[in-house]
Amino acid sequence: MTALRSALFNVLFFGATAAVCILGLPVLLLPQNAVLRLSELWTSTTIKLLAITCGLTYEVRGRDRLPPYPVIFAVKHQSAWETLAMQVILRRPVYVVKKELMAIPLFGWYLRGTGQIPIDRRGGAGEIRMMVLRTKAALAGGRPILIFPEGTRAAPGATGTYNPGIAALYKQIGVAVVPVALNSGLYWGRRAFHKRPGTIVVEILPPIPPGLAPRAFLAELESRIEGATRKLEVEGSAGGGFRGDPGR
Image: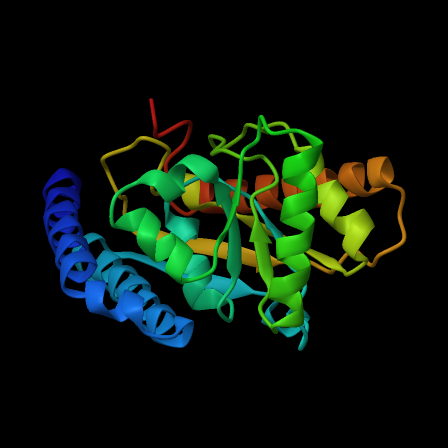
């Protein structure tokens, strides 16, 4: 049944995404607000589609910790799910994304149209400086920043390398960083076809105020995210979530 539901979701998701990307092309000629509205419609519909076809829902804990002003969110990355859902949970976040995504036909055009920040992780100090400038501009425009500090998806129980880019943003911009833990990989694993029914838990953790040394900040960020994520994984597994790496 899980395979059938996952196949149904994939057919509907890819079909709807292709239709939106093609039929929505004229929207790219409009102001950014119109492109953002189209993106929000697509993501909210996808999250509802997951619930209907796969029985996969979500819960957000710690909403009261969401600051009323734009900050940087550092989000645990286990699945494609959070790349979609965080657009629904947060208010028009600007993602820091891999530069090569911008080159994907149609999809990359929408990334540019919604103001996402590309970065070449092999670009060195110059790329970091450009990321800082674009982040400052987005925050000044009232939009929060979302970055996956590990850079790529990590399986449940695993910890990726926390990249120095987030520490550079923290040091040079001087705003709070809000860690976010989750257990999405238990239900929709990396490179996995199956989407298992259940409730993904997203936990907004207390913000890390500015002022720490970069190395101390990075250690604190990793400790908070990984500690909370392990607890959510244990909770999800006890409740019937998949045990182990569903991407294998």
